[in-house]
Length: 413
Image (cartoon, rainbow, N blue to C red):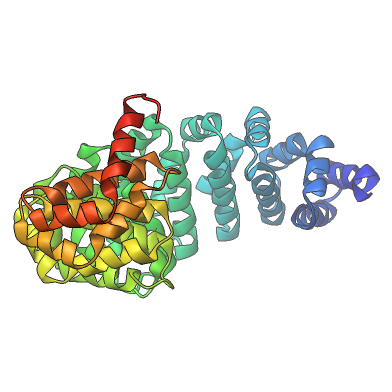
């Protein structure tokens, strides 16, 4: 096997040979990583991590060597918390951040950002170390228009920041570094690529989740209108991430919900639901279209606007066509919200065929959350609605609901 002698010899060339041989050795190791997980494991076992850390720490390393070393570190760390921790312990993170800050080669910057993205994805210690080494302001700087960074570099910087947010302390540091206005400027730019819009929407969504302060700051910076426009993108990835970002902004804020409506959100979101009711649509779009619809329906005026735009049959169609439990949960929740204090909506939801579908979801013992949301939707539909009550009984819901109640009470069934 090549790893017995070939790989250790290549690793020795990284620091004992001339520049040209070192670069060739590093590139060969990159190719070996891509060919086989066994090769990757052999590189690590032969001392590849400290050898690569030494490469990127060297003051006279060429851009070609730095690029290949960063690619190797990325490959070694992907989906491997143990390797990521070893990379941090070898002292590689600080020089990677330094490359991000000081290298004049865009390729080196992109590859080091890619390595940092992979490290941050799997290791809490790496997330802390990247922040401690100054990685956050360096990544945010690449998002500013004044940086002159390419879209490729900006996208990779956003993906790295999205992973760094998993650490609560990093989230505050990322905001303090000025990421919100930089992101809003990016999504407002004419001609921004789909990849850039997707990454920016993802990062805005991650920043707003469980953070009312960040959500308020994102809205105040002018993000809502361009995010609404992203919902009409031809890219499903952009549509899904923009809808997810809007959902995060709409939580617990009537002002932000009304701002989404004022920006023309309802017809675009209903169109997204219409597209989502096709089986060919991605699960991401189906899920986020249903979720943002449910979150927005906290005010009666917004609910009626969704109904007028045709949301009810589209949500019912999602229940019928989607096999995803998360999509079914989101659609059931949205239908529940639509039925609150609205006899007309209850009747329309029943007439659209939602009741037997919700009863069917009650029987899905694989997801307790789905059963609960379906039961809540049926409960709302039944209040002061004899017609729906009869339909719920006819669909066989009563014994299933009784069994669920007994199960929740811990009784034998």
